[in-house]
Image 1 (tube, helix red, strand yellow):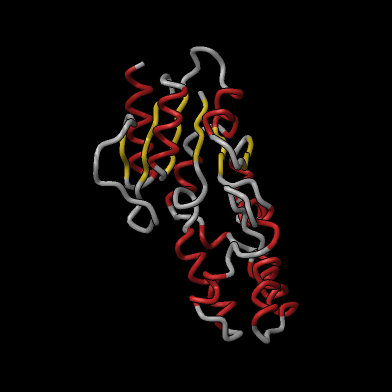
Image 2 (image 1 turned 90 degrees about the vertical axis):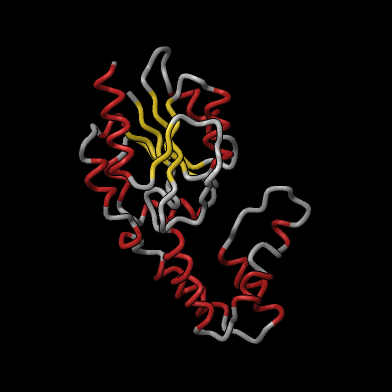
Amino acid sequence: MKIFIDFDDVLFDTREFVIDYKKIFKSYGINEKIYDKYYYNYPANKNKSFKKYNSKMHVREIGKNFPINARKIEKNITNFIKNTRKYIFKDVYKFVNRFSKKDLYIISFPKIGFQETKIKNSGINKYFEKSISTSGLKSKIIKNLIKKNEIVYFIDDRLESVENVKKKIPSVVTILLGRKEGRHKYSGKGNFDFRAVNLREVFKIINKNLCAE
């Protein structure tokens, strides 16, 4: 069996993380409007359909237009991201301890240094066989890691991601997780097997399915 789990908004309280992250900028007089304007607006991302976040480029682009101490902000960001453990949802630990480490995989989006540092410094990796970041389709990663007739689960908060996996690998049991603390919620129908609001519910779904096998 393999269980693939998204990171942001599933294992990690990204909304709360972003609120605290923006406070660093605010402490230097950078309001949300400026923060948002230069979030992706730097040379490394120009003319690219998929934009990757780079915290240093973000800060330095703001510094080109406003009188700030970019190096101090960068240092604060580095210190902030050194420990992201507190943003792991409380139900995560009980969930992962119910399974063997070899069955658990983090599959996050996108593949950028900022994201991988955030995951690594949360300390959650030790509960998982592997942590994979990708800027492409998660279905491609999953397809390369699973065996024929293997029981596979995929848990994500983004409908488009869940639907793509279900379309490309119909045998995978897909669970759309919409936490109350999450940033993505869907009330309508979609191409997925189950819907849950926390990992306690996800465990019940998986346990019931395994008992029925």
